[in-house]
Figure (tube, rainbow, N blue to C red):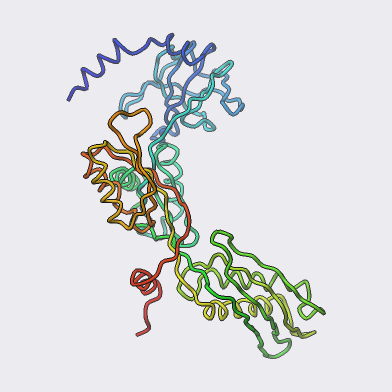
Length: 414
């Protein structure tokens, strides 16, 4: 409804091309690329021409300073393209063979105008995806690269800790559309599920632990022997490693191997999650002149760290995000109740700058509670509330909630 009236309003009321060129300081023939498309005729950059004519084969300069030559020019209407030889100011055209140019950049034949600062909506929704057929791994990677180039609201993340590929977008409908496009356009069917929460674990008390790896089988054996001390450090300080070896009990060339073994043990701690905020000191050990090796000391370090973590009162940490919600004042009380119902901790609220009748609410919310938050906020505000979230810190999680998370990660033996 109203599309024709909208088009007539744009035709009669929107600024003329020359007015736009003056406002944006465009003096020479330039094109503002606002979108990239991958179609049957290859990669096309959709752009609006300002400041003068652009012809097929023109020498152009990108915002990065790279020089390129304009390929074929097309007028685009839906999926139909019509080849043209030149584009006039105000025209919206597709240009081929400008592979280095991205959406949001200028290209032109002279001095380019300053970049336009675009504020994109927050990408609050995420799906973890994997190809339904493992043979499509490579095809999926290429398809995602093209989709991200086309859609500025889409982000692809690789979570190494949980071995997940994550699609992050504006909302559920946006990501569902992207997944449908993967299958329809690129023939890649994917399975999706909520992403894993980034739980971590740490320790509560210091521990001194001995670790020995000894193996004898025909010829040279393996021998590595270390003693380490571990202790908790302040939240956010990460991993620290040092050595206090005296008298060469562990030769210096094998100390890095001990650290590697310690790091390997921290990838998955006794609770099933990556270990953080721990300091490790190598204090003693022993070696064999024939059987000791880098491998033996790496395995000894890993064994000592595994046993030390189990004895150091491990506990679970959950990621906390700082969220900022903007909503109509009439919905503020409902919004704060919704946040509190998700174990949220209110930080403050006040009027939204420059917006009459709107509020700004800030809170800390566990990452585990972010799923479905946007839909709930919309339902409590007639579709008007939005939020942004960013990681803030790791907080200790105890009680039944922690027990449930650990049981799901490390199932009890039958």
